[in-house]
Length: 335
Image (tube, rainbow, N blue to C red; front, side, top):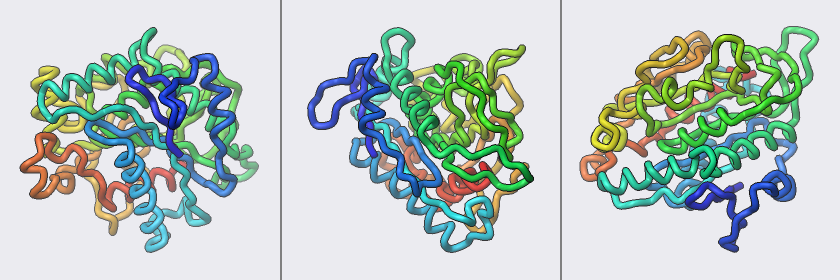
């Protein structure tokens, strides 16, 4: 399923070039989105810089197909999904292409900012509506009477590059919601005052300053009794020193390298750093059960010989089985 946005982040009606009025977004989603009953995991995928719409759809499909193949080949490494893993993906597409130069990077950075800016940008508004709709209409689990795995449909966020910024903005825009059942899974409790609950969030090579979660996304991790963000599971962020888009270009555009190159810097909550594992090694829950997890993928996200010729380096080199291994592990541990 694809959802397309224009340069201001407004929801587009497919094949028409017209946009859905802000007060009709909920109605449009209700009329056009149907969650398959057999789906076990719902993914909302938002792509990043230099990704044409068709490529974004292919990349999202390949990622979940790799996850399905890994589960079929080694179920013992993913006990939470032993009874089934049938993903359904909503791909959010936006105009992200530009010339691969500093000027092109800045232009898309400014477009991403304009699309998500309070008062003028519509992307967080549309995405928050989308997440709220998916949360309300997914099959929610009942509160288990005994210690047992949760059953139902799980909601996950997956972003790449600037797409991760859109997702963080959307989550910040969350407002109050009815109480949800308490379930097993991550150690962070569900906050009953939010409009949706996200079971995991995975962002590949995020194009944002290293202190973005202090400067721009502090509401994701509030303190002092403020309502908590709807992140039930961890926020997992990959980085690689071979990523020139968030290294070389980000350094020149914003004065410092980005998260996708160096991981997070200052954060409002404790963070952890782990190394990306091969598909032969299972992740321990204790390694991922943190509010923010940095995953060093520099040994894998190197881009090969093509990255030596590409101005963005390994920025988009996350299409590996090891990435799907991380995604599938998060789904497994959400149960």
